[in-house]
Image (tube, rainbow, N blue to C red; front, side):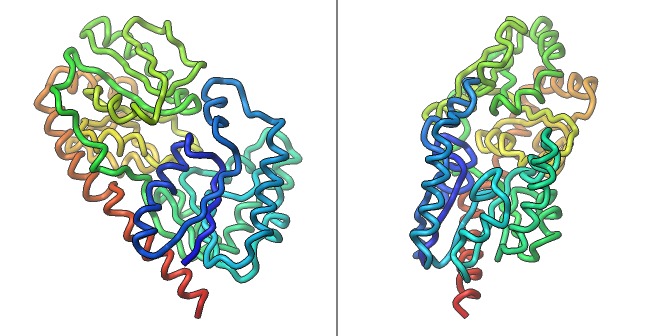
Length: 358
């Protein structure tokens, strides 16, 4: 089977690495060969993280290259598309560029539709608010990062499979050395998701002053507040060091503001924490409420008072951290690992391509 795969970003984006690239060896072993084409070149994501914005001068070439790729190869067995082929381009054009009679599997790990439905420009809302619905009607199947997205996508496509964003639990493992003391509260993410942490900064500063605990934030970007309080350590994200950095945490957190886009998040940072044997604490928004088994592998907190009470418990009780971390590690290997999800993706590809061949 030959598959053409299209992502928005290159390998420097977590979505590309974890929603597509890490599955390629398992797909290859199953006889499924994937030809991968990113829309935007290497370094684009780093520009966004550094606060430089997109390199707009390169966009016309990127779009022209994608159109050429679509027109040049009209007989793959399957198209595998992350979100959409051409952002800000109407569905009618995108659909016309696709090879006829070739099945399409879309992958959704975020609430993509909100980008158009809530866009600040009325013309974009008018032209594109129905884009994803039209694309999904053409889909043979859709993989979604959580049930919230599945329910939305299910309005247009009947064949929807929830595939969490997972890690290779043979690589993402607990640290060999004992955790640091005093404990380190850890967060990994991107500049856009750092906004969910900001409301907790005054609480975290107070906990630092009273207990010595530190907040270690990976990937918050140039727009984060390095001088918020002395106990805040901002770390630049690197693929080469991300596992080792998460292993330095004592507690992994994922606060979320209760808004529509956040309800569509896939809880990936929680899975990274659990794979490394960390206790987790999160807002009960979207899939977080499923990943976090309250009082089993971590704690859920809706209010600042609940965050404070939970963090104080975890800071003070190393045994509790160990118990939650061990339970989370089991959850990660059984439910949120590459080994547990790759066979499901292989099966979906075979069923979709087989149905098309018939």
